Length: 249
Ligand SMILES: Nc1ncnc2c1ncn2[C@@H]1O[C@H](COP(=O)(O)OP(=O)(O)OP(=O)(O)O)[C@@H](O)[C@H]1O
Image 1 (tube, rainbow, N blue to C red):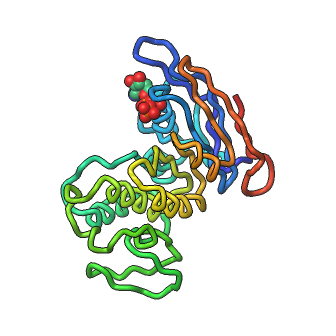
Image 2: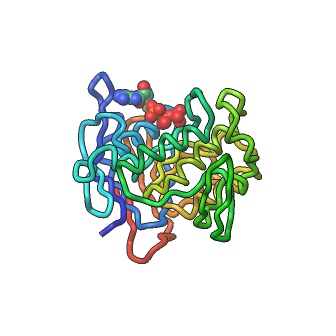
C-alpha cells in the first residue's frame, strides 16, 4: 500500500476542455515528486485538487488508503497540506497566525506540533514569546537564518523571502503527512534555498519547481505537465522506503 496516492485526478478548464486528465501519482513515505512544466499548465491547480481546496471533475486521493472523504476535509487539509508560494499579506504576526492555525489543526487531527521559530536538537523546554516550546528536533526557523524577532513583527514588514520561509516553517511545524509545495524557494537566494531544501527533504512532498538543479537534488520522481493536458511521469529509482513507489501516466 503506498503512503500517498492520487488516482485519476482530472480537472477541466472553464471552457470544458481538460487542463489535465487522469493523473496518477503514488508515493512512499519520504518520496519527493518534482512537479514541472511551463507556466499555466496546471501545476498549482493539480496541488489544490489533491489538497481538496478546489472542486475538480474526476479522481480521488488517498493517504494510507483512506480518502479525503473518510478523513473529513478539514482533517485531510491538515494532513495533506498545500503551501502557497507566498502567503497572502495578513493582519497580525506570524506567531499569532501559527497559534491560530495550530488550534484549527489540533481540532482536526490529534498530533504533536513543533515550533516554527527555533531550531533545537535537544529536548529541553525553551521560553520564547511568553510561551514554552518543547522541541522535537525541529530543524526550522533559526536553521534557515530567520531571526526569532521576525515572528513577532507584522506580516507587512517582512521581506518576500522571510514570508516564504516563515510560511513553510509554519507548515512543517504543523507536522502534515504530505507537503504540497508551490515553488517553495522561489524568493530565496541559492544558499538559503539549500538550507530550506535540506529540511524539506526529510518530508514526503509533491514539489513544484522551475529549477532543474533543485529538481535533480531533491526529487525521487518527476511529474511533467504539458501545455495540452498531457503529462509524463518518471521515477529515478530513488524511492525512499522500500518497495516501488510509482508514478504512472
Ligand atoms: N479553479 C480553477 N478552475 C478552472 N481553471 C483554473 C482554476 N484555477 C486555475 N485555473 C486555470 O488553470 C490554468 C493553470 O493555472 P496554474 O496556476 O495551475 O498553472 P501553473 O502551471 O501552476 O503555472 P505557473 O508555473 O505560472 O505558476 C490557468 O489557465 C488558470 O486560469
